[in-house]
Image: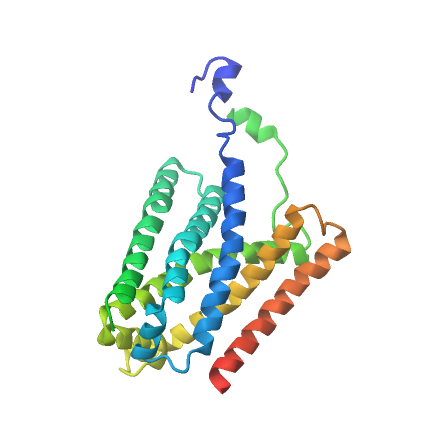
Length: 127
Length: 141
C-alpha cells in the first residue's frame, strides 16, 4: 500500500470478493444445524438414562454417529464463521488480527478432528 | 488520513439509541452464538471425548458437569455445569429462533416496524418456553 497518491492510499483496501460465499455458507450451515442439533437434543432427551453404556450405545448406532460427525463438520464451520465475524467487528489492532486469524484457522479444525476421531472410536470400536 | 477521520461524523452506538426488541435480539444472537461456539462446542467435545475414552472418563465428565459426586471442586463445577447446560439450551433455542428470523429477513420480508418488533419478541418468548419445557421433561419424568 502506497502513501503518496490518493489511489495509492486506497488500493488493496476494498472488497476481497469472498463475502457472498461466506454469507451463503453461513446460511446453508445454519439450516443444517437446525436439523442436526434438533436431532441431537431430541435423541438425548429421549434416552432412558445417561449412564455410560446407554449413551455410548446410542452414539455407536449408524444414524447418531453419522449425525455427530456431520455436526463436527457443519456446526464447527458455522461456529467458525460466526466467531470470525465477531472478531472482525471487535479486534482492530494488527497483532490482535493476526492472533484472531490464527485462532479461527487452526482451533476449529483441530477441534473437529478430535471430535470426529472420538465418534469413530465409539462407532467402530465395538461394544 | 487521521485529519480526515477526525472530522467525519461518528455513528451513534448502543448508549445513544433507545433500546428496542430488534436491537436486543440482534445482540442476543451474537452473544448466544459465540456462547454456543465456545462453551457449547467445548462441552460437546469434552462429552464425546470422555465417552470415547471409557467409563471412568465419562463418569469424571458427569461428576464435574452435573453430579458433583467428588465434593469440593466437583461440587462447585457441577453447580456451574447445571447453570451452563441450562443456559446453553436456552442459547440454542434463542439462536435458532433468531436465526430463522434472519432467514426470513434475508428474503426481504418482515421489515415493517410492528412486524419486526413482534417477531423479535416472539423469538425470546419461544426460547424461554422451549427451555422450560425441555428441562421440565428432563427433570420431572
